[in-house]
Length: 407
Image 1 (tube, helix red, strand yellow):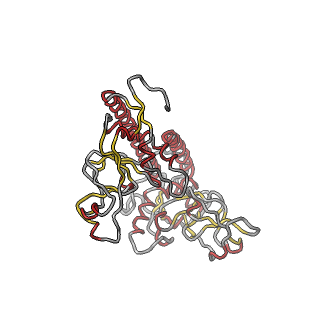
Image 2 (image 1 turned 90 degrees about the vertical axis):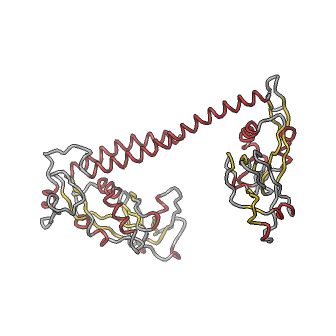
C-alpha cells in the first residue's frame, strides 16, 4: 500500500468505488450526427469545476451509432489524452463525451466531491503514467486500477469541508494579489501623471526657468503661451514652459536591408539588428553587414515602437542597428532635456493619447509630422533630475512589491 492510513479507512481502487465509462466520437462525415440536442463534451471543455456549458452537441442517432454514451448529471469526468491529461469536471446536466474522456457515473461508498478532489491530487501521477511521447495518454484501465485511501462517508464530508475552506482562502489571497497588482499599475500611472504635471516634487525658485534655458540655447525659440492659450493640455508651474514636441525633439525611423543579408550568428563586419521582439522575453538575434546598417543606436538611446500591437511601447536601446518598426528619439539641443525625463514623457498620456489618435486613422504607424501639434511640458533641467530620482525611487519600491507577489 502507498502509505499508512487510519484504522477506520480502507485501501481500495477507483474501479471498486465507481462505475466508469469512456466516450466516443461519431463519424464526422455524417452531418446528421451533429447539431442535435445531446451535449457532447471534448476534453478541452473541462474546467476543473462544474460543467455548465458544452458548445457542441450530437443527435440520438449518433449515440446509437457510436461508442458515445450519455453520462448522468453529477458524473465526474477526467481527461485521458494529450495536454489535458488529468483535467476534471462535474456534469450539471446529462451529456456525452468523446473517447478522450472517462466518466465515473455511479458512486459506491464514496462521495462525488471526495472522488473529485482525490483525482485532482493525482493529476501529476496520471501525467507521469501517460508517458513522454508526442501524444501522451492514460487509459480507463490505469484509472480504475489506481489505489485510493477511502475514509468513512462522514469523514469524507469533513475532509471536503476542510479542503473547500482552504481553497476559498487561497482564492481570496489570489484575488488580493491580483487587486494589488492592479493597484501597483494604477499607482505607477498616477506617479507618472503627477510628474508631468509638475506635482511630484516641489519647485525650487533658484532653478533657472526652462524658458530662460531655452532662449539661451536657442535664441530663436518661440514658446507656446502657457497662460493665455486654451489649446494647451493643462496648467504647469511658472518655471516650466510648454514647447512644441518637434521644436526640441526629433525622431528617426529605422531601416534594414533585405532578409537575404540576415545572419543568425555574429560575423566579422556585422552588427546586431534589433527588432521589437528583441526587447521582449523571446529575442531572436539577427546580424547584418555594418555597411548596410544606416540607422544605429548607442546603448541607452530611446526607441519608440511604431506599428501594430507594439505601438506605444518605449525602450532603452542596446548598441546596434534598429529596424523599420522602431524610431529613435533625437534631442535637438544638449543639456536641455534629461534623457530619463523624456523616456517617462513618452510613457505618459500626452504621447500615448496622441498615438491613439494616430491609430484611429488609416495609417499603420507614425512619422515626425504626426507630432506637429503635440506638446512637451519642459521643466528646468535641475527639476527634471529631481523628478526622475523621485520616480525611480517610488517605482523601485513598487517593483519590489511586484516581485514579491510573483514569488
